[in-house]
Amino acid sequence: MQTTKAFVLGLDGVPWNLVERWAKDGELEHFSTLFEEGASGPLESTIPPQTALAWPSIATGVRADTHGIYDFQNLHDNYTHRMATSADRGGTALWDYLSPAVVGNVPMTYPASAIDGQMVTGMMTPEQNEGFTHPPELRDEIERKIPEYEIGLKWTEYADEPAALVEDLQSNVESRRELMRLLMDTDDWQLFFFVYTAPDRLQHLNWDEDVILEHYRYLDEILGEVIEYTRAQNANLFVVSDHGFGPISRVAYPNRLLEREGFLARTNDDNGRGVLEKLGITKASLERVLDGVGVDEAKLVDALPNRITDTVARQVPGDHPLYDVDFDATTAFFHGTSHLYVNRKGRFDRGTVRSDEVETVKRELRETFESATDPETGERLFDLVDGDSLFPRDDRSPDFIVQGREGYLVQSALSDTFVTDTGAMEATHDHEGIIFALGPSIAANTRTEDATVYDVAPTLLHSIGEPIPEEIDGTVLEEILTIDGSPEHRELNPSMERSDAETDDDFQDVEDRLRGLGYME
Image (cartoon, rainbow, N blue to C red; front, side, top):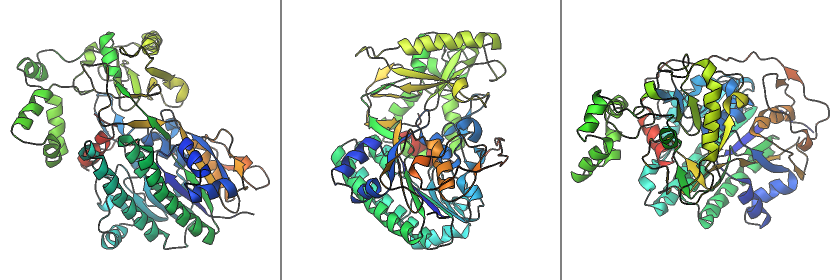
């Protein structure tokens, strides 16, 4: 039996091992239904397993060297960066060719696209402005019917208040559920794609299994509502997470390793920053002054326009991974959540490495990172994946992906210490998420085989009788479907263009949300 409709319920950061255990123990009634009546299995995330990269990969079925979003921020040739938006995405998302479509709270969709249907943007939305919804008048309806609706919480405010985090996050999820119900008030859709990001946010700052289970019970309640809705719509349901999760005990700083081993040099000349540093005016000293007069740094940053705080960051010496680096004397540098770059001539404005030297530098970097150990425990810290092999279609992709080994988080700050304690952070992403499916085209009590995030889009398309675009990197999970016949394919001619246009939006609030989760320095 087949249907022409599909619903994607996204649960950001939900790991397979927790859901499998709790469903089998009878703690999650509706997840147990998915195990018994549908298909289930772990879902391998992207490399790195990161929200900004993974959700576009799920939505398009293509890798980052086609869809173009590698991280929350785009790095420019002049060593500046800006927040990534939907305008940066290449490839073709499911909602671009399944219509009508309803899309809600999916990360990296701001500003909303003019799709055939409705869209409410999610993570990375700076404010509930005209880019928050399509059509624009949907914003007014949300403000009227769900006045307490928020894009996200400012996680920096919860470092010392885990109980308040749980309470406020629950309220946030409840308003998100009201949005889902508002969007459900129609039968006119072929695709419904809705994401809850709360589990990821909770787990970063609270890895107490009792607390997590209580949250998952509420997600299970939402799942029950979605199952009932999709059955009434005669639709296939796909429940997916972008990555898994696991506890951490230490934080490692790749830029400090690069500095220690001579690949990276800090700015220490007689320019403005150098003079200020010699006078004792640094980020740390300014923070002490603000604290001494009772001014909260976070609130001050919130109150100032983004262009002002950015200018101060450029002028006042500190630990910024871009502004405090002397790129004229730097061979390689680490940026964002996982990206290691060789400072290539022709790639960067102040590149120092000739094209014939790149492979030698990459070999030295691999040896350096693969031999790096925690000075306290002696454990290896990093795994490296070659960017040229991982992203062969994009010559501007990172040279390496740097990932912390089990128990370690990597961060980009130009720290004076190589490895530190985690502070408020208790857990971070790992590779094993979840995939479940249930519906008219789904075989009961089946298990996926080696499923990846790239397989979600083609499997969904084939399950509703749609051809698979030739561009897609993933494959159809035929073992979970009841459909006879091989998938059909079609050409789409996806756009590979990347937008260089600057946005007028102030992303300071977005940066604050990300900073509290350890995604930014």
